[in-house]
Image (tube, rainbow, N blue to C red; front, top):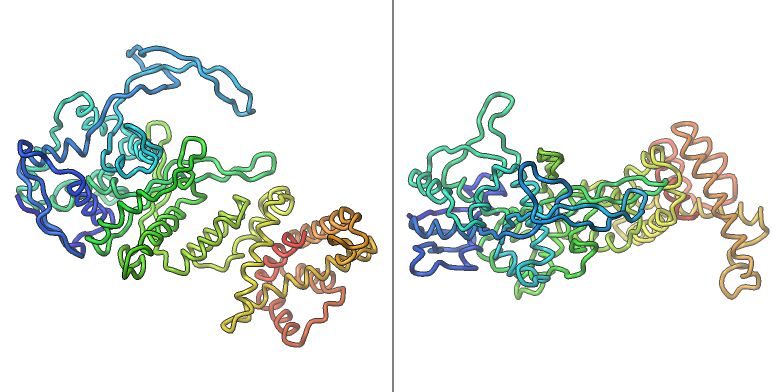
Length: 522
């Protein structure tokens, strides 16, 4: 049997990633002479061809579903199945107290994923942190329904699967219509609300078994407020599936990129796998791929290999697998550049999350912070030192842009608002404490009174922040003009005109920037 594929004929990124996954599996390992024929006969920029016989297809499926039995601790005993043993282990409750908890130890099948294990830079023996993340994702989401795990369970028990024969019979009629399941194609269902079934061509559906070996797995964080502070907690898995554009080069560079992943571990997950948002997985994968391509002689852009990424956010809730969101992200060079600068610069999870979402949505960096100030407790915004730090760093980063030749009036407004807010707070601090910054900075005559200066500055900025937060529309305009502009600012004519127009034409933008500037100054 010979199968021919072209990237342009495949209907989705999952299919194109599946084609790349099939190529990598056959490049990684070949069947012995006694295991039949399963080989690549042609590989180019946009096409690939394969040759199989039935025994070779059986070998391929044996590798695809290869699994072994490992011990696993479960918090509840299985009905009608005695555990191997019981253990008591220390665990922390919601209040952080250490308690002993009983676990039941069972043997459970674990996917081997030999290709991914060999590409895991943390691999040690039969496991590694990256491949464990992939295995956990598969078992909890793609194969979250127990019935869908049967091929792995059979292979772990040393039994063959029937999938190879089923696939062979379907591929004998490659253009025939076959049903699609959500195990193979994310987002598929038996029937739509209009009673239309999900189907695919047999030769296309065959590829969908292999895209999980290409998908990059991340752990997105759910933002929670605890004790009036924002922090992230793991929420399921984010899958970044590349939309392959140049097949042969992609299959050459992708394994090298995987081997170059970070080895640092946070908790029990690779640190690089932790992201604030599901869509961030596309940015991080794009960043990694660009770093790999930069080492390639004659390389140009990441977009030459990948058109974009389909991002899926999945989790298992009870017995159901839930698909939280689906997005397509097409990060260009400027977006990845901005991401590389933002990620290490920002400390606060709420602030960082908002900025990353604005980056992906191609919105101004300050978008949405007015809503955050109005709906999130004060202690998690202005009251959080990390939030104020990120506001300061954001203004610093964007100041250079406002001074460039291509600067727009909108960009020039940001440093102007910061200048005005800083001038207001400084004048009020001087009036209250009789101190200026030059008098209390390091090495100055009154440096010992720096604490008094900082305390007054934070209090004045906080009061102004709360006042702006509680005012919108004309109320904000009157407060801005009557209070923040009540001290001399010495604005030139151009800045005065820009500020006046913003007050009346871009009131909400000015209000958002004022809230952020007060956070930065405080």
